[in-house]
Image (cartoon, rainbow, N blue to C red; front, top):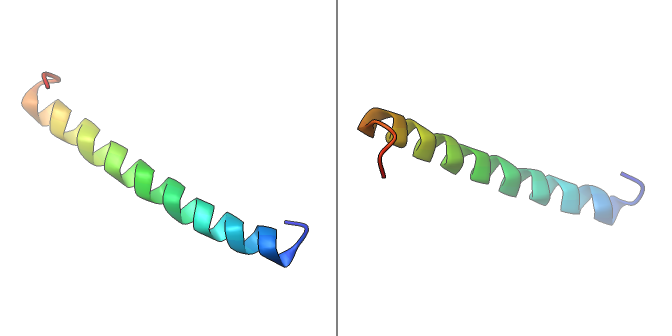
Length: 38
């Protein structure tokens, strides 16, 4: 976090990472409910 631009980009990157993590967790949860069979 050296520059304001980098900080702003980091915030956006974090949001994307969190979004992907949430999607991954949802998929894993569904797979577990189905029995791990896709």
